Length: 367
Image (cartoon, rainbow, N blue to C red; front, side, top):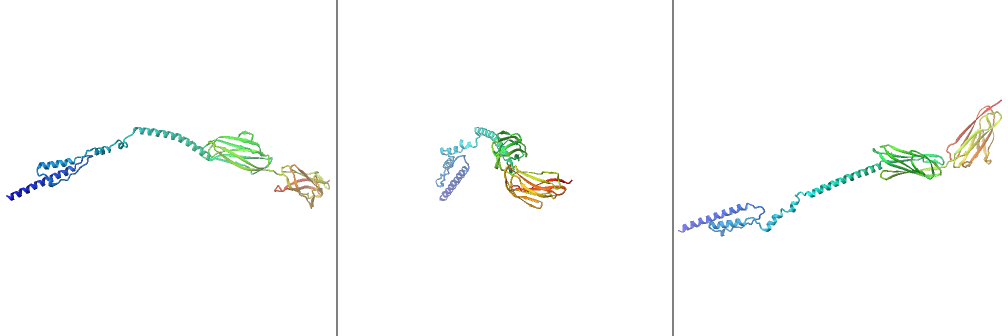
């Protein structure tokens, strides 16, 4: 009897154990299935409290499965809906209005850019033109009062595209008197203006101005060129108007032809026709070989002496011959032979770097 009870007890234990393992397997299977967005609660099963009957086991299984159902509480529902909100979808939504506005704005910007680009291109072209304008001024370094001299203004296109609407302006300085110009400028007293419609690539335009110095001293000559955008380029150069002693020399004989044993006078007349003193004027006269010296004098300067050596007559130095002043030297000789006589003079001053030579020929004869 006892043995029978023991066997029954063991069989019951085995049956309960098998049911418990089956329930656990079902729980594991159910736990492996997920519900989207749900949360799961796992309940530990106490094998010691497991009912031995099939209904109790089924009840525990249903309870466990129920406890593993997704948690659709308000909090979890908010979490689920919060993942798919309008804000979260806005980035992926095509905003037609914004796109249209952006396109319109882009077109406006493009249009403005095109207009602005044209203006920028034009400004760039003008700026480039300014850099391609070369201005030159050619002026003699030294000139003399009451003498004409000419200077030149040249505008050059150094680029490979035409230069347009160039204006050249120049005012003749007060110490100069305008004599003539080229290219028919607009003129207002001493103010001159030339307008150039176009200068071809690598070409130039030149304008000449001829003037007469009216006062001695330094003179600044200025030329201004105005470009298309109103910017200017200006060149300046200095010149000097100086005074100079200008000697006019007349050399002649009083009798020609002259008979042997007769005399003739060589007359040398020197006039300062310049506008500056002729300083340290000297005269040396070499009489003809076919003659002998008789006399020498300075007609309007009695105190000027002379020295005779052989055929050479040297007059004393005249310290100053003023502008417009005239001096007359006379050298008298006696003809001693038949032939072609040549009288030679040499004139020098401190202001003229070279000696001026003059000759006068005389024919002699004998009856």
